[in-house]
Length: 334
Image (tube, rainbow, N blue to C red; front, side, top):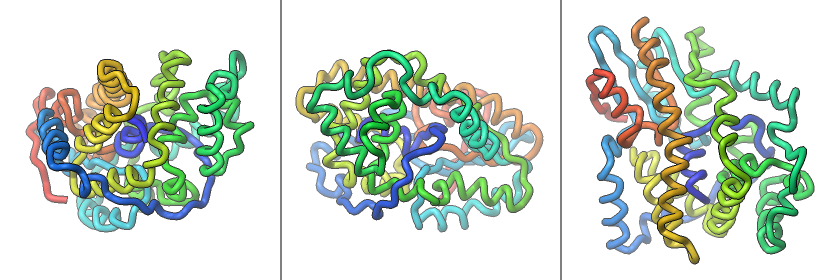
């Protein structure tokens, strides 16, 4: 599991159709429970170094504008039922419900991929089989077979898309095969059942814009990083989910950074540069684009905005940006 895994699970991007595999629920150990005390202290210190590092439910007010911000986790988990019970009164009172991508965006993504398969498939240049070493390809082929995808198909996929698939452990793909769509999907289902307006925070084209500026080597690097973490994927999946339900949004990102730095052969300067790059494109740029959308909805009446929890904390997180826009923030118990 790589830095991309943390972002996919807690920040989220609209990725369209994913591998359809029926795997068992992830069975692993929570790495925080076995972490040496010195590492734990360093992890907590890094987490606490950013604004608003914890909490997944916030009320933001500015004059008559009120919006509740809900940090979500994009995979299914029975613990979401308790969360839904907590936020249902807020959803019922909302004039508008905002999500990263609503039903219209999901449909638009599917239609666009059907019209233009080259968005996801390599049409010129080396295939992944040709671009990776024999050892790397063998590891990738095995990892993708576990996710229900034949290697000959994977070889022709664009590396950014393969990175997205690798970011989700094979044991977690059951959440994507006929599941509810995580807390985001449950919020959307509720809004539809109550005929509440659903507003998308971003276009379905966001995923293409995120990766279009990355070169082949940068995308291959994401694949290599994920493959290095593959043997421990189930443990990371359990750890990240538990951290989310403990309200530890930033901890997820810092844990992934810590474990990536500990991998053999890593250049610390390069790791930090990679994390800064991914935080910019996966969180910061999107956060800034979302603020006017949230403000516009809140000006029309009470609103709820539900999006990946990793978007909440940090110097350029949604909470700090809302504060800079003149909103008063209050953390609420989840």
